Length: 288
Image (cartoon, helix red, strand yellow):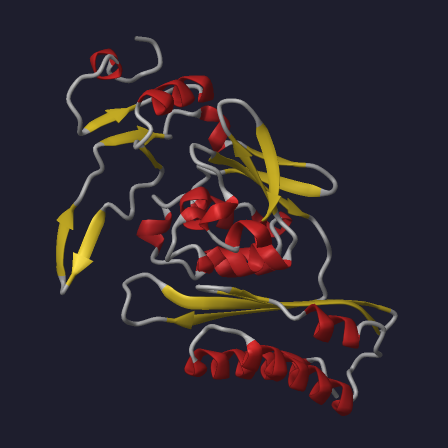
């Protein structure tokens, strides 16, 4: 059968099969026949670690995305860049200054060079543990994701996608990531390590700011981990303030974040304290 996958399997052969569709219609045809099949991107998470012992656990059916040319594309316009979900993480780092600095900082902190040569952007975004590595930057940058099913295509904000697994419908595939090309005068990226998990983080935080004639026009502070935290009230409170910030305005911003975090259900108190420290460090750099 055309498309690079085993025709006998598509007719109901034994499980533990890997399919290699070459077009999205072929992928969704197989996915409809094998609804429990799992999309496979870079494959960096196939090894499961437990007490320093690793074993290979494969789902009954795998949909390899490697030959879907559309998912490997990179395009640029005057307003945004678009990355296919199968673009390798290290390839993003070679694209230069056209990629927003906050995003390249986040990607550069993901795992090792060797794993970034295999890992894909879509795989990182969709991973329930590793996703926070890139999510904070993508949310702060107002990125949008294209989700495609057999019947339709739709766009969803990075913030909504990161809010929980219900954001994506069953048998929807992340195919493109669109990142606006906006100029930011200040960028700070912080990754909070979780040493209990290999190549994982407790979350990350991005603070962005831009100004015009020394007037702060936009400020964004986003944490993404097990939950997404962003206090838009504190951002609004600083809009229109002169740079460098007055110490009272800076202290007010920090107090608003502390109040916001105290009411948030997660993360744990230790991580909340680290988030506050990150907020304080960023605002200090914007203050006289």
